[in-house]
Length: 238
Ligand code: MN
View 1: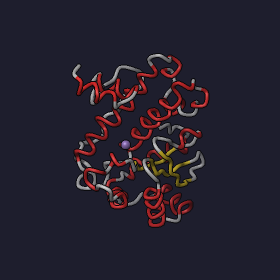
View 2: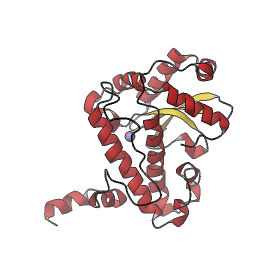
View 3: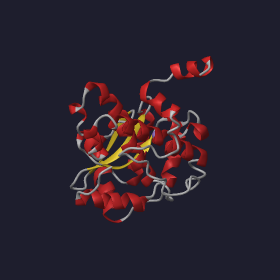
View 4: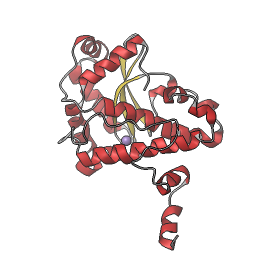
């Protein structure tokens, strides 16, 4: 290994470096956690979300979270036995040495698995009991979008903004830093948007508000409605 490569690697740390050097990006990592395929072509959300961003985001960023999680699970059999939404409620029970890795990469895996599902649509509005719940709990679609986007802009640094859903079908807005998720408190996520710069920087640069506004055009409300039905049936996981 030449000095340049050694210097590059020295700038990386731990599991992320291991994932890169093994070439784990963009391919299935061995282990219990798997990268779900994008449920549509990478250009399905053009022009609002560009294909290059979608490809990098799924094939590199999400894949790296899965690879890092599998790397930890390899030496911790109890992790491998749990689905990720269960694992995320047990962070306090984990050994100190792996807790932050599982929090960041398990959260990243769950958040992105949800994220791909709720995109690929044409925006617009839900109907039926989901629309009624938005009206009842979030002040209607227009007010919800304003508040959701404001929370996304206001999230300092990296993070997510979510609509959460409880088993009765009640909705609420929530923001979390990094790859944290309401799943970590035993909650459920109806939908959410990623406000890490990697989600929008190629097309929108620093204009996060423009990205948040454009994102509504690609929400798949049929998929969100299906998640809402699952939440009320008690079968929604990530
Ligand atoms: Mn992301």
